[in-house]
Image 1 (cartoon, protein in one colour):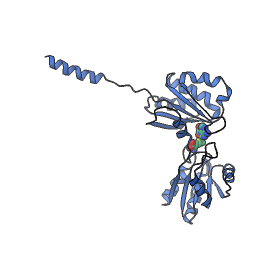
Image 2 (cartoon, rainbow, N blue to C red):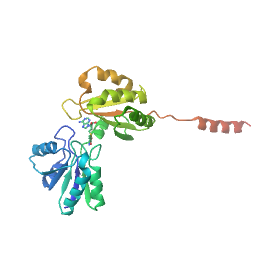
Image 3 (spheres, protein in one colour):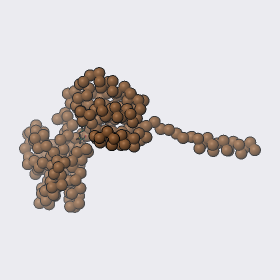
Image 4 (cartoon, rainbow, N blue to C red):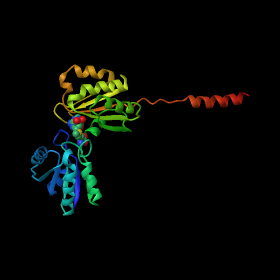
Amino acid sequence: ASTLYVLATPIGNVCDISLRALHVLSMVDAVACEDTRNTAHLLERYGLSKTLLAAHEHNEREVAEKIVARLQAGERIALVSDAGTPAVSDPGARIVDAVLRAGLRALPLPGPSAAVTALSVSGLVNDQFQFVGFLPSKARQREIVLAGLAGASATLVLYEAPHRIVETVDALLQAFGPARQVVLARELTKLFESVHRCPLGEAPAWLAADGNRQKGEFVLLIEAAPVVIDDSAEGERILRILLSELS
Ligand code: SAM
């Protein structure tokens, strides 16, 4: 008892929910969720009906207290977001923080996350990736963030909402140049799912060629910066050894 289950839900295809997640949803006392209609719909789909506690960006602190109190009373509560893994570019972290501070237990129920889903079909080197999430909406701030990322030796993972995709791709091109590979992963696991990979320089034309390509939710991946090996110091060291052999 007295556990907060941090539970991942589908990012599109409603079947992408684990058997364990369904089992936990069936036995909890309440479900804390972003949008009660959305979650009610998911539960209904699996024949479940639960007390729902609205927990969104704007009331996360108050709800955290409420959840702690319920857990202290011995309840079991699931925490979900509208899609994917809670607390990843979604509300949840404050609630988990409050639960841990109260000395209570938070258990993860793993499942979909758009970032990892896109990485898995990117074919980019994924031994290192950096999760950036949403870029700032203001152009100047976005530029500063991107300039700081230009040299990163990891695949970059960005989230983007449909209305800004063209603008964001232009900003990426400015910051990283035309040669690096970009992956535009759109509507993953949904009806109009598409994953397109091309050099960044070709991405604006690809988006412009068909208005449908700009619609939906996106994960953007950018290939890591090329590794520049500065071998001048090593060359000098070898030259010195050779010279000392000659003298
Ligand atoms: N917590 C979620 C996760 O674990 O992936 C992310 C939630 S965030 C508010 C929503 C963003 O995730 C979207 O704007 C988009 O960038 C990305 N996203 C979510 N579902 C997606 C999907 N089916 N296809 C592509 N991107 C998706």
